[in-house]
Length: 183
Image (cartoon, rainbow, N blue to C red; front, side):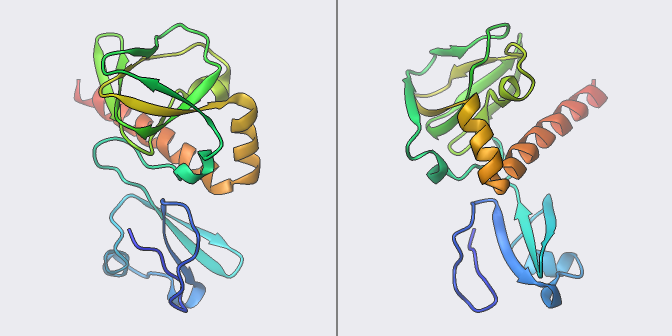
């Protein structure tokens, strides 16, 4: 996705930010949104005199996180088929997929595949409960680990990170709701 400002310069924004426009350029209808290159779902936020459009990749996998936030983070590598964590374990970190893919299982039910830029394990950092799912490396993968202290720092210092995490959790809840309705 391309990022731009009205003056044609490219701001340093997180991958989820699709466009930053001034109030006189607020997309007024779906055609304007499509013209800006956005597909639903998107979130429109007002910030001072600007509007920021956040577009989440809702295709396979989850919305993406800016990997540059984790350049100094610890990494762990897992072979395909290796268990990263299981339901019921104490959760002391969330993971960001730097390379590869990770499958999330709720008991015998497949939930999703998290791909590069996706996160998992964040619930344990938010509510301090044990893991609610199993995470298994689908492919050889490299993961950034984010402990509770680093997570809190990212939330405080990088508001878009917090919005991205909330967007990911909301999308997962929507998928879970849809599955319940379908069954």
